[in-house]
Length: 126
Image 1 (cartoon, rainbow, N blue to C red):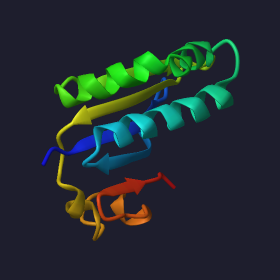
Image 2 (image 1 turned 135 degrees about the vertical axis):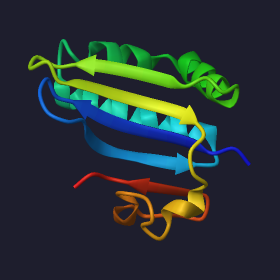
Image 3 (image 1 turned 90 degrees about the vertical axis):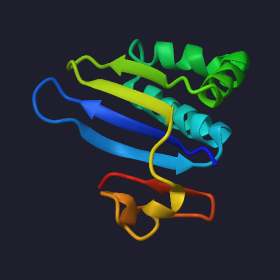
Image 4 (image 1 turned 180 degrees about the vertical axis):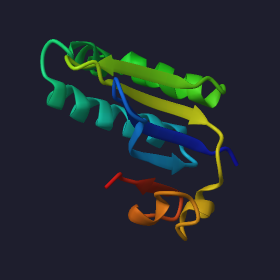
C-alpha cells in the first residue's frame, strides 16, 4: 500500500529549517487536503500580498483533483511562499516515506506529538 507524506517547513533567511508539522497517510487525497488546509492557514497569517498566490491556488477545484492525480502518479507537489522578512514557507506533499504505523509509537522525530489514527499519523511542531 502506498504511503503519502505532507509537510510544512519554514526556511528562515538565517538558521536551520523549522518543521511546522505534517501528515503521513495512505490516502493521497487526505495528504493534498492537509496541504491545502495548511496553505490556507499560512496564507491568512501572511496576509496580502504574500498570501495571494496561496488563495489563487485554493480557489481552483481542478487544481485539487490534478494534485491528487499527480501524487498518485508519483509526482511530488510543492507550494512555496516567501514573506516580507525573506522567510520561505514550503508546503510539500510526496509519495513515499515510512509506513503509517512507524509513526505511532514516537519512533520518528516529532511523531509522539501527533494524534495518530488507524490510517494516518500527524504531528505539529512545538
